Amino acid sequence: MIETPLANVCGVETTGPYSPWRVIGVHVSLADRGLTFATNARKGLCVRFHEPIRGGEPLGLLRHPGLTVTVADPAGLAGKLSRRL
Image (cartoon, rainbow, N blue to C red):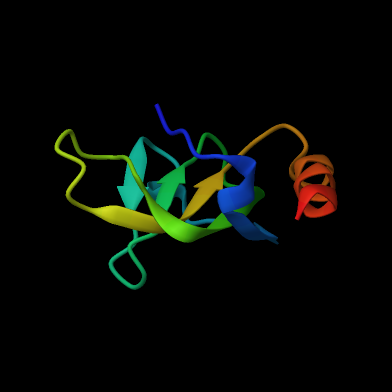
């Protein structure tokens, strides 16, 4: 489970499409340490944080500056989060 206060969100961006191999399970980007929870290859939302978050490994040693999720309505979630920034 990933938790962070809304105040920690500093930006959002719709992303995709993704390669099919990125859709199964949890992935950590080697480029920027971002965390991805994906269930489809079409479209998702990348949520960026002021302070990197824990997740993806049990000890919490690796912190993630962003989280990409494939939700049913990425644009709708982006709009709601953007209004809170």
